[in-house]
Length: 233
Image 1 (cartoon, rainbow, N blue to C red):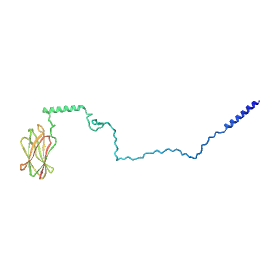
Image 2: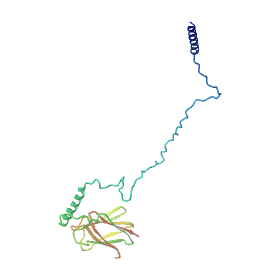
Image 3: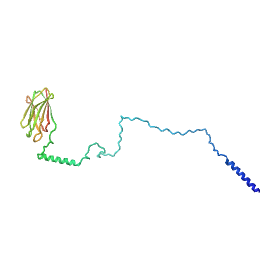
Image 4: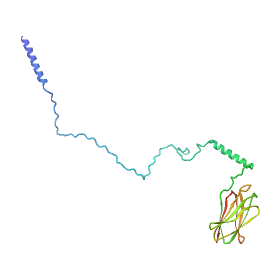
């Protein structure tokens, strides 16, 4: 009986302690107030690049990539026209045409025009006090039917002195009266000779018989001219 009472007393004591211990609400320990106030972290502002208007007058810089270019190597970028895309058959065709033309010329079936003079020939300025001049002309080569036309030009007006003048081995005279100032003479080849271009020799004399100039023209094509300028002083 005594033992039962002791057990009951211990049960009530433990039960009472556990209710007192676990019945109250848990309270956290407040932090220690040190008086130091912290600031909230603020993100640092991001620097924005300055906006600069482009200078349209400034030439843009050109940057070249480094290359291993060596002297003698072909230019990788070139505006020079090359024959890379030319048909190889064109060269063979041109050579064949030249051979055919040469063969035709050698056999008298085609006229050789490669030697013809296609530009006017200026014999310069001659100063004289003579009132008139005599131009003596002839064909200095083989007689093959060369024809010329002589024209005097003064003050922008042309006067035909001789037309369809046939050149042979004999001299033919062309008389020319000079006006004050500039006088221009043109000897024009009216055709090609049967053996080649128009050829001729000339001698220019004043009224006293003095030779002022002598020379020749060679293998003129039709329409090509010998030009002279006379200044009457």
